[in-house]
Length: 159
Ligand SMILES: CC(C)(COP(=O)(O)OP(=O)(O)OC[C@H]1O[C@@H](n2cnc3c(N)ncnc32)[C@H](O)[C@@H]1OP(=O)(O)O)[C@@H](O)C(=O)NCCC(=O)NCCS
Image (cartoon, rainbow, N blue to C red; front, side):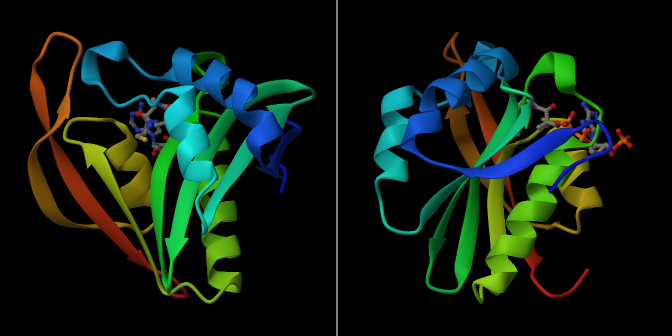
């Protein structure tokens, strides 16, 4: 549950939403329209099967992952790490925890969508996700520009 930088990855809940929003506003470039509002996060977290992992350095929120499990599939809805904490393995630690937790719950497939061109694609490929499709004009950025989404899947229990 911890990296060698004393980052802790823990389950979160509604009480952690203010910390989630600190990471959200720091991590996402508004240009691309990927970030969620607090109301959107609260709405999802209130739904059955939704879960949150939060990474902290002491009390300081470093990043989070928001997921939703339906039957034997889990969707990674969002993952974000604040700029000052990047390239230290925190997103990978969140992802590994999510994969372990989902597998322990009997989930067989993890899937996600990511903006075409987002460097997070490298994170997902490195964690064993494979591309399965494209959703055209899935994201709408601040200036009205639209961006395709790539869909990735990772079967659990297999690297
Ligand atoms: C994507 C994001 C979560 C990565 O967080 P992170 O903690 O810096 O990632 P990690 O340190 O765990 O990276 C693990 C590996 O992923 C890849 N990776 C991560 N960020 C990368 C980048 N900007 N460019 C290329 N590869 C990257 C690398 O292979 C990296 O390993 P390395 O550092 O040994 O080369 C972070 O950049 C972020 O919050 N971005 C904005 C939010 C976002 O777009 N989220 C994804 C869509 S929901």
